[in-house]
Length: 566
Picture 1: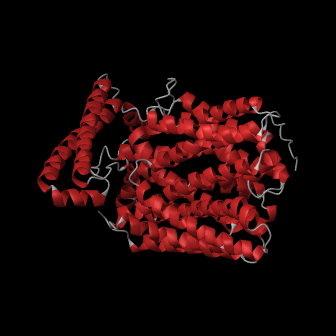
Picture 2: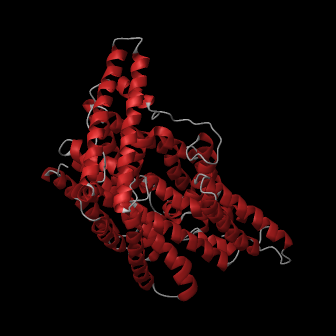
Picture 3: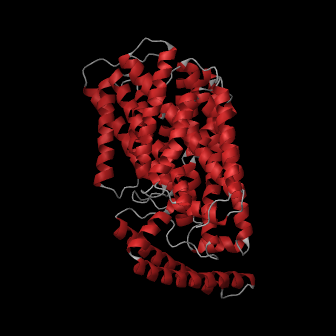
């Protein structure tokens, strides 16, 4: 595997230094918790909007989504079909209410509407889900370092995690937001540059390249099949995706905290509309990188195993078996390369045999996939570790194939996006920990300096938790799927509580029991019926909470809780 050129490291170091120094500069003078957590509610809408997008376009997107595109194509974009609808709904419901309520966290409102135990349980579920997701985001840059240097994954997690935790402890939401703005610019530049290089390097026309991708089903965007077992379909995206996005942007503190920093309700709405307009096209472009990497490897010999660490373990333990598989792999890859060129030649000549050549290419591609599946099975048998290596596809391509300088730019984008997203997550975790638990239950009155010190301690503890999760998340498959699986386990039930709060007759007992019932139902479906796609968990959780909550409210003799309007 080719090592990183020193110029690439200069690019990486210069960018990360600039972001960190500028972020800390902007955080100077932050001595009050409102400034530390909410930037004194004085950030412009466009900065808030870019911060919202940057939090999503983390290293998980740069690595996990591109890898997903390489192995599965464009179908994943259906995941975001519910986003525009969710943003419109939130713009007229939760956004104006929460911004006008002048709260620090979304969960403060639940105590006003219901009671303290409902607020605490909902906040606890947020902390658990976001803490695990933060670990998954941290795993993405760790995968990069592991792929580049062959270092143990745990050391790579610490290499990225420790500086980020320290940066977050010193900074605050204002530093995080302005860092996010810079990350978005870099990410868009890096993505555009990589797509351009791929189109130049692929030795056939863009039309032929897309034809080859389409022949393997990687350009299929829409799947109108209605099935609870299929993860990425039009209906799971529109229905399940809408519920997920409503919960993520409307009740997840990491996102709520963003628009609470806006100057007004109107600017908060505008910040969310940036994602509504631009998220799907940008996500499609990210997936296209993965698809083009797949096409690029139709004319170059790709690695049989993308994870170099696991490849080394198998080579040491089973050298003969690995060598035999490698020989077969090289043979079928060579045949696929010839078939790919034949398809291009037939299409260029307008030959009627183009369909026959495409069919032959498709057959050869299936043989390559089959041999690689055998190699992955050998990895699991030999190492006892999960062998999914989708997260290593793009790091290997970047280091081995991109020009000097551009590889550094892309990795700087991955690392900077990771720092930005992790900092944002840790800041929201600390906010909820201090506001919803420490200040609510342990120390209601204290100086801002005291609460700031507690916040920094909470940031450190959540950073440790995220590092532990990160060491496991990298081997669970596509990181973009892992982070959304974690979220979907909790998000539906959390959303259900906020929906329930909109019903005048809903009562505290119903909200609390409904929330528990929602989580138990999702857990039963997740572990008892694993064939149900995770996007539907959001619908199941929300509906269960609302139905059970209203039913309990109807049979509870106590008078309805009066809504306290802020």
